[in-house]
Length: 139
Image (tube, rainbow, N blue to C red):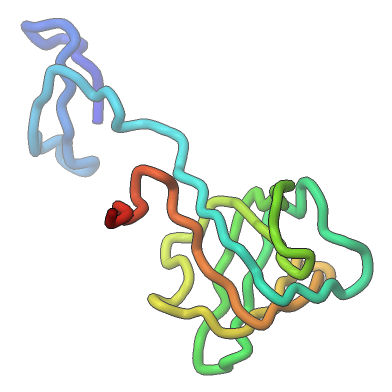
C-alpha cells in the first residue's frame, strides 16, 4: 500500500501488488486499517501453580498446552495476569493470541509454559468475550 504521492487527489491510498505495481484498489481513507491487535482474555479454572504465584506481567511469549496430545499448543504474546474478583483457584490471563488461537470449543485441562518453565496447570479454561462481542442477556 502506498500513499497519494504523484496522484491527482491528495490523501488517496492505493493497494498495489509488490512485484509489478498492479493496483488492486484505491480509497480516500485508511482509518482503522492499522490498529493494535485485540487482546484475548482467558479464565483458567482449577489453577494450580508450579512454584511461585503468577501475578502481573507473565511473559512475552506464553504457551497454553492442551493435555490432549492430538491438539497443538497455542501462543499468547505479551501475556499478563489480571487482578480482580475471581474464585481462589482461578487465574485470568490476557494477551495477543497467535493467528490460530485455541481450538474451537476447547475447554479441557491445559498447562501453561513461558519458554523456560512450567507455570502451572488448570482443569478447564474459558475465553472471556469483550462486552461488545458477548451475547445479549435475555430478560
